[in-house]
Image (spheres, rainbow, N blue to C red):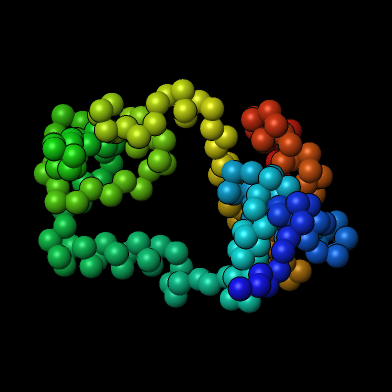
Length: 195
């Protein structure tokens, strides 16, 4: 079987200037921006992740009817109808494992039996803070060597007028993209001028 396409070494990363003839810096920034949430710079990310851009450009950005919280409300309603008990305003402090199976969730000094345990926290937090050491997949040394993907800082600003020139899900690149990425990954810290 013949390969459909063979990539040279300089085409294996997502760095748009290498895999696409477009040289306009703003367009390259837009195409490379989603990669920051994967935990790497575009030049260090496999080109396969360009599928994220494909999905965004061809499928668009989808919003649930009623807003993002409508998804939470729907899941909550369905769970309540099926007998799920919710405990709010408490922190999970541990997951009990018996014979390799998660059986309980510890919340403060209380323990809740569980048929299934799903942690929506970060993988590292679940491993190092919630699971017993015998059931952790990775050591503290492993986690200390990892480069974590940054989240984002959001500002919700209320205005007394409508912005006619900006649409929902707008991206503003008012600082050099390369500097932003290097400050996050080369010397992990909060960027001097966040995007």
